[in-house]
Amino acid sequence: MPEAAMIFKTLATLLFIDVSTSRVTRAIKAQYSLLLDRVGGIFGHITRFQGDVYLLLEIVMSDLRALELAYESFCAENLSLDMTRGKPSSSQLDLSDEMLNLPGKGKFKDADGVDCRNYGGVEGLSAMRGIFAEVMDVAAADVLVGGNSSLQLMYDTICRHLLFASPGASSPWGVGKVKFLCPVPGYDRHFSICEIFGIEMIPVPMNGEGPQMEVVERLVAEDAAIKGIWCVPKYSNPSGVTYTDDVVRALAIMKCAAPDFRIFWDNAYAVHMLDGAPASLLSIKSACEAAGNSERWIQFSSTSKITLAGGGVSALAASQANLKFLLKSINMQTIGPDKVNQLRHIQFFGDYSGVLAHMKKHAEILKPKFQIVDCVLNRELAGSELACWSKPEGGYFISLDTKPGMARAVVKLASDAGVKLTPAGATFPYGKDPQDSNIRIAPSMPVAKDLEKATEVLACCIKLAAARVRE
Ligand code: PMP
Image (cartoon, rainbow, N blue to C red; front, side, top):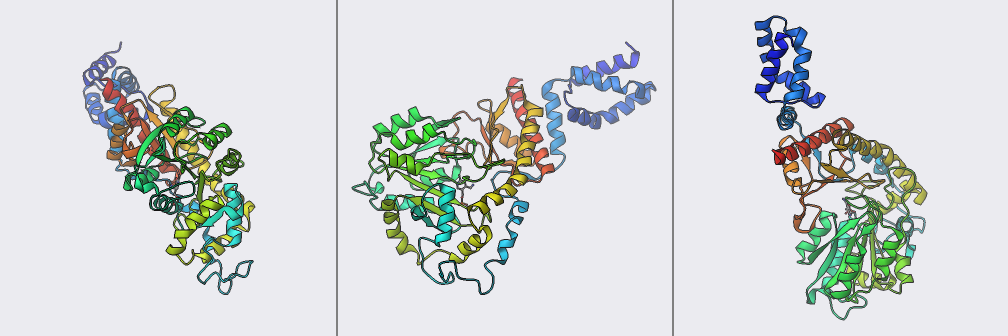
C-alpha cells in the first residue's frame, strides 16, 4: 500500500468514520477538507490519493458516525419545511381562482329561482344537494348541505346525539357512558372530538381492507355503550385504504348491542384519486338498507380539498328519519346556510362531471408529490427493514411505520433538523401509539424540491434513530 494511503487508512481508523452514501461523502469532504489539506501539505502527493482516502473513509467509518454527520449536515442547512397537515398547496387553490369572481353581480338566483342572498333553505340548494348526492352515492333527498366544514357537521352531530334521543334510542347518548370505535391509524381530529366530549375511544386496527371486522363485530355485540365508529372509507386518513365491499357489508349487518349505534362515514376523500377514476366504494346507504339497518349510517363530505379549504361547502347525508332528527335542532341553530357559496360552487362545477374533471387537475399536481416521497423513501430505505410505508391511490397522506419504539425519536430528530412532521401518536386516540411506530406524511403542501429534501431528512432520521438504538 502506498505510504500516503497507509496514513489515511490510519487516520480514518482513528476518526472511526464510515461513509455509505454520496451525501455523507460530501459531508465528510466538507468536514475533513481542512485536515486533508494539512496532511496534504505535509505529504505533498495528497491530491493523487484523495480518492483513496474517501474510499478508505467509506470502508472504515461506523454507520452511526456517518449518519450523525449526514444529519448534522442537514441541520446546518437551517431548513424550515412542513409536512404536518394535509392542506392543499397554493397551486391547488389556484385551480379554483375563477370561483372568486362567482356568482357575479346580479347573478344571485339558482336554477330554481331561489334568491341566494336571503335567509332560508336550510337543507341547501337543490343543485348542490344533487352534486353531493353523486359524490356520496346517495339520493339528493338524503343530503343536507352545511357550512364550510364537514368536521363541524361531525362535531355537531355527535353533540346532537349526546343531547337528544335519536331514532332507535329511548334516551340521548349523554345520559350514560359513551364509547366509540376508532380504527387506527386514524384521523386525529375525530379523536379530538371524542376527547372533548369525554367519549371513551377504543382503537381497532386497520388492515388493507378496512377496520379489522372480527374485532369490531365482537366489541359492538357485547357493549351497548359503544355508540359509534369513525370511518374514513375511501383513501383513508392516513393509511390510504379503501374499504372493501365485504367490510362495508359487514359494518352494515353486524349485530350491535346499542340500538342507536351510528357509523360516522367520513367520506372526505370520495373523489380524491391520484390517477384515473375514484376508487369504487360500496354505498353505505344501500348496504345498511339491505341489512335492515337503515338508520345506522351518517355520511359526511366537503369540497374543502376540491375547491377552497377555508371557503368550501360541506354536506351530510343520512336516512330520512335521521335527517328529521338532525334538522330539529339545526333549525334552531341557523336560518339557513351560506347559499351564495353554494351557488358559486354550482356555477363553477356545473355538475358532478365538472367535479371529476376538476379533481383530475388536482391529481396532476398531487401525484408527482406522492411519487417524490415514495421514490426517496425507496432509495434510502428499501430493503433496510427500518420502515414500511403506504402507496396510496388517492387521498392526502402516506402512512409510514418505523420499527416499534422509534417514531417519537424520529419526529423529534426531524423537527430539530427543521422538518416538521405530524406529532408521533397523533394518529391514535389520546395521542398514544402503543407501538410508537406510525408517522403520517402529508406531501401536498411543500413544493417538489422541498418535499424531496424533507423526505431525505426523514429517511436520515429513521436511519439515525435506528443506529443509535443499535449502538
Ligand atoms: N375528514 C377527514 C378524514 C380529513 O382528513 C379532513 C381534513 N384533513 C377533514 C375531515 C376536514 O374536512 P373539512 O374541511 O370539511 O372540515
